[in-house]
Image 1 (cartoon, rainbow, N blue to C red):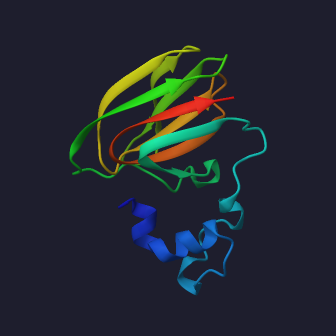
Image 2 (cartoon, rainbow, N blue to C red):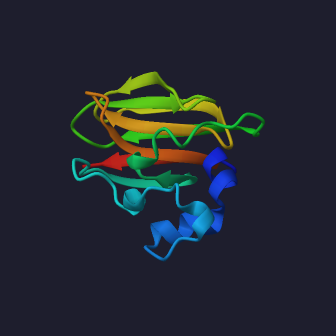
Length: 140
């Protein structure tokens, strides 16, 4: 995991926040709510080749150039369409696919790139950092 926010606050600080532990002083910019996924999300994710981050990190997480290319798949096991969104090098959203219920979307991406899964109204459900070849399955 080499995302820009990890470089600025340190992996140990992010892990501490996610586990609800005290945060070192240099990591105070990490939101206190960072360990909880928004209440509107009732999705369950299973994944390989990725790390999950809460939606509250949007604006902090961005893709980082230079990683190795990998094949990655998104699988929608819900009854609703989902948006597959790439977060660019500035953290801006780019919709790559509207994944219908029961559908799969595969893309060549890169290690250290950030992707968001959102509902059809563009509400974030989860943010993921790519760490290798893999997939994310979404269940409701």
